[in-house]
Structures are given as C-alpha cells and as structure tokens.
Image (cartoon, rainbow, N blue to C red):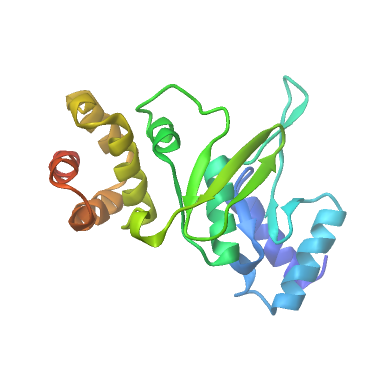
Length: 200
C-alpha cells in the first residue's frame, strides 16, 4: 500500500466493520483523485468493499452462518447524504425501530430526503430514499429529526413514561442538549415529550 492507502485503511479499520464511508470523508488525507484511486485499489484488493460509486465499507462475516453482514442501514443512508450533499432522515417507522420503541422491522426501510428519490440495495435488503418537499422535511440535527419522526409515528396517546426513558437511554448528553434546542421546530405536544426526555 502507498501512504494514502495506508492512512485511509487505518481509519476505516479503526472505525470498525459495517461503518459506511463516502469518498468525501477522506479528503483531509489527499486530493479527490488520490482518494478515489486509493479506495479503488483497496476495493480491488478486497481489503474493503465498494457498495456503490463513492461509498465503501469494511465487510464483516457472520462466522456461524458463513455469510457477509450487510452494512448498517442508517450508516448507509448518512454516507449517501454526505456523498450527495443532501439531507436524509429515517421515516417514522425506521426511527421508532432504531430507538427501540418498536420491534417491527420495516420490510423495506424508508428514509426521507430533500434530494432525489432512489432505491439502494445492501445485500438482500433494500431501502427507499424518498424525496420530501423542503416544507415537509423534518428540521433539527439528524438525531433530533429522528426522535421527532419516531414520536410522530407513535402518536401523542402512545407516549408514556417507558417511551421517555427508552429514548433518553439511546441518546448521549450532547444529543439531548441539541434535542432540547431543536424543540422550536416541533408542535406543542412533541415539545412537551422532548422536555421530559431531556429533563431526566
């Protein structure tokens, strides 16, 4: 490996399997051409895997089943957002599942974007990235937007003490601080639920 390949692979390995990377993530290590060439060589050597143009990940094998695990769906969506310069947030059903508020895994996860609609595949799974008009796009930090989406999906009457505790457990202190700042983007009942999450 040359120097830039070594630095790129070192970062990918440090961040671990199933973390998804956009080419843009490595521009601090070299020019766009040098980064693209390094990633291409790493993929050809099967050191990393290319998901689609400009998107890569370190594969992980399930030794018990002898199959390669697909990359994390949310990681993939966020890498695509970085690649295209668009915003992407999970739909309510996906957000509720990620936060542990629902055990139902959508057969085809849906993410909302202010970019173009597309379907992307990861192994046997596929996700729909669906264009949403700017006026309807959830605002706030990515984590705040996900919490708002999950709460809207559940509905006001389904939010209880257990829901509040579950969300609080999934968020870091920094994420909760951003969340309470972002309540200006929500309706009154959502803001009230968010305050309970952040007050704990």
